[in-house]
Every structure is written in C-alpha cells, then in structure tokens.
Amino acid sequence: DKGGYKHFMAKEIAEQPSVLKNTLSHYQNADASEVELPDHNIDLAHIDRLTMVACGTAFYAALTAKYWFEKIARVPVDVDVASEFRYREPPVSPGTCALFVSQSGETADTLAALRYMASQNATILSVVNVPESSIARESDLVLPLHAGVEIGVASTKAFTAQLAVLALLAIKIAYARGAIDAAQYRTHIAELNRLPGLISQALGIDGAVQDIAKKLATAQDIIFLGRGALYPLAMEGALKLKEISYIHAEGYPSGELKHGPIALIDKSVPVVVMAPMDPLFDKSVSNMQEVMARSGQVLLISCKQGLKTAAEGTWAQITMPTTPDLLAPIIYAIPAQLLAYHTALAKGTDADQPRNLAKSVTVE
Ligand code: M6R
Image (cartoon, rainbow, N blue to C red):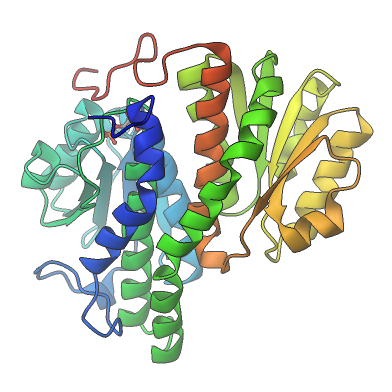
C-alpha cells in the first residue's frame, strides 16, 4: 500500500520522521539519559578498533559513521565494501570488533565478509533492518533499525535509520571509553532526539526541489561535493541519482576537486554542494567558488545563514534547517533523496523499479 503516494520511495521518504522517532525510542531509557542497547556481553569500553563492512548505501552509512567513531569516540575505524574485503582476507588482530551494515541482512558479499571475520574470532556486530535475516542470526550483537519494511529499491528510510543507530552506538562507546563526559553524552542524546523534528522541517523543501529537478533532468553528468561527514553523503546523493534517474553522477570530497575532477566542470555540469555551517564551511565555500569561476552551475544546500553568506553567484539554493554538527549528514540525506526522486519523476523513469537493480543482492 503506497498510502496515497505515487511510489513506495516517496512514501518511505515521507515517513522518516516517524521511523526515526521509533528507532530512537528503542535505544534509550525513559528519561533519555542513557543509550540502551539490546543485551550483550561486549566490553564497549575496550573496543580499540572497528572494522566496518557493507555494500552500496549501507557502505555510505558506514563511511559516515567513521567520522563519528573517530571524532567522538576516538576509535580508529576501517571501512570497506564487502566485495573487496571478503577476497582480501585482511589479517585480524585479537579483540577486533567487526560491524556489518545491511538493510536486508541477506547481501551475499556482506554475509561472506561476516563469515570470514567470524572465522578469525572477531566479535560480530550488525546493524540490520530485517531481524530474522542471516546477518542478524550470525551476529554476537544485532542492532535492529526498527524502520519497517522498505520496498523501494532505492534505500531511503533504512539509510537515515542506519545513521541514527550508528550515531547512538558511537556516543555510547564514546562515553564507555571516557572519550566524552556525562554532560557531552547527554547533549548528544538530546541532539539525536531532535532528529524527527528536523527531518520533518527538511522535508519542507519538496516544492523547491521539484523546480530544480526539472533542470537536473536535462544534465548528462552531475557532481556532488561535500566535506567531512558530508563527503559520504555526496556519494550517497550521486548513487541515488544514478540508480533511479540513470544520470551519471559522482560524489567527491570537495578538497579533492582540484586534483582532477575540476577538469570536468563547464556550464553544462550542475554541481551540488552540501555545506552545512560547520567548522569546514569556509573551505567548502572556497571550493564552490573555484567551480563557479569555471562556469559550473552550483546548487548550494546549506542553512539560512550559510546561504546568506555564500549563495551569491550560485544557480540554485536549497534551505536546510540549522543542525547540530552530529546530525548534519542525517538531515542532508533528505535533499539527496528528494533530488534523485524528483529528477527521476521529471525524466519519467520508474523510481520504485529501476532497471537492472534488485532490492536485495543475494548473489555475487
Ligand atoms: O540490503 P543491503 O543494505 O545489504 O543492501 C546493500 C545495497 O545493495 C543497497 O544499499 C543498494 O546500494 C541500494 N539499492 C541503494 O539505494
């Protein structure tokens, strides 16, 4: 049942405020003073290294979480796509924790990577949406998304729920390791509880995105740029667009632009810049100006203040709510999803059944 929407994807985008509310409610105590995980016997205070493995959108969720685990919990993290990881058979030191992210819990490469890590005696954690899946069954600790069934082939609500669960885990581990104090821990929990409200607010951009998508639909190539935790989001935005609109798109770290991709820029290439007002904002803006100096058509996605400071000369703007740094990659997933969806609509492709793609990739 599409609940009155044209596609499951649109329905699943729209239901994210209630999905996230539900996800968050499963991971905290009544007065929101503690992150609570399902029962386990893992010593969180002694997680000294984390290996994360996933595919596609789940891989981008893991890459985003690397920023949180390293910055907030001070735990070094390796992230890899499962199809590479499994055949590289990396050496595993004693006490390694491996974390697998998968909506379906059945992705063949991710499951094979899990089995390899289990054979090396790693502790296996997983973040899955389907609690009875193979990946869940073979894990020492399963962190379910509680996002409800996701039908659209392009993952949307599972992605933001993955990010929410990974952020909760990062701050839980950060506190257990003494990397943050009780006040910082509570502040982060309170920030996470603002997610449903901020996502609802972000969904208000729908009309503005429809107009922008009409122009994007005529492009051959689109570049997405972001820095810090917004870099994986740039890749996620590009993947969504490729999947359902069939337009070639690439996500790059803004600072990498001048090491090659800037050669692609001319007036026919829209460049989507995701730049919340965080400590890296000025750097993103200067990269954006380099694009504009080469006639690139910039779509700037930032908050009101960010747009006031930097929108001059851009082709289009999307106004996002002001967000705590921790939440920015989750909130900015909304424009990534809506840009892909409305561009697909403008091109007349079927957002729910993109060509050549299956919802769950259970063969290599
Ligand atoms: O079920 P999984 O999360 O393991 O699936 C991983 C990828 O196949 C999946 O995220 C894919 O990239 C989506 N179609 C993205 O929208």
